[in-house]
View (cartoon, rainbow, N blue to C red):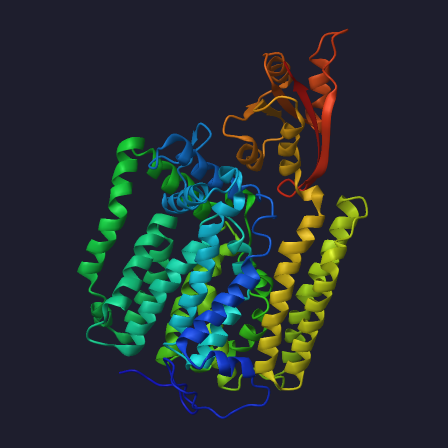
Length: 577
């Protein structure tokens, strides 16, 4: 037996809303929700507005992004699409899906004549851009199982506007594509749970199993984890797992095996089991057992970070929690709780904390938030609600001040002047969102908050970062090779070892162990370019005999390393024929 939402129950799957009209309705939502085609077109336009600025100009962000991009580039260079390598080192941490997607995007760019396609980071980001766009459209599809068309559109827009999805859409990594896969599978699972149909059509069957299979190729067990936890919880609630039968498990598992098995068999034969030893034994269990790669965080870290990562919807999402608890026995709310809460607790318990781990849960938080909006739960009459809603303007104001302080401190008192008008507009619109909420127009507050995100994201990623050259150390170093009188120099680096430098200068970049090796490299003949980080410069100079000093520098790059949190000072030396 399914339970229903009590008074004011919501229509679903595109039906007209049954609740009363409220003041502050967004007329644009009325027009866009006139049809599914309009709604999807509106969401696609929103995503392009949010995700396109900065795709080309934002430098490769160390360290994970250039590692993924470089491994994909090496697949194209070697023609080996089974092994995953970063220079000479096997990169056995994630399955092959994202590398294939990135290599395909770059190959398409080359075919279309994009200059220097293999070092254009924007091409490697295309799978993430499309994954983020796809996850928003799939969130709309999934939300239709809970909400009328207009409200489903608002939920998908609220998810699409969140800062974490915007960030992942700009990074050539797994997480945006993973979010799309998880949203497809969970959206299908929601329709099975709420519909309890005896047999599903092929689109829902394919959405569930293709999301699962592609998700396994992208990030191993993560999508199965996101699906298994709510399936187990809801089966316990229903006292039976029979509701899962419409998913045709045997046919679905056969399809999944058909998709994922060939590469897993190939990598097993090629690596002799080394892939599993590192991916499972070192990478996954290392994150479960401790704070891998210095990313430790205490329990509760995700809950605290959520107010920034899910901005601008986080403050409103917090107000939906009383509804979730009160209506926890309702089938729709039970599904949302089962999808979010168990996985969230697992991630809070694991010592390694990275904010993007919970990204696939955010579409369902957005759905819960809009359900609460429709039920009149998002209201300034709640104690402390106005104070919580102040987070909407607080984030853009804090980012604006932080960017100005960063430029002032790191770039010789530089201020991102071109970005300031847009940043200021984002702050004003976010303030107007808070004011609309305080005046009991919550839907208008949602719309203004989404508009503030449409201003803030492009201002930061499309404009402000262009005016912070201190953060672009590797691109500035790579540009020095074009100043030499010879072409295609051999390049090495002493001290500065960021993966972005490997990606931008070439797979054969030699990362030298000491000053003597750096001296020998420069004396090796032909056209050569050497980078020496400041902490190695004295040792490098002492390596040269008296009377025969090191050649004069051909360039100096000073900046800030985001990974180490320290300033860097890199000197370039050249030897030309």
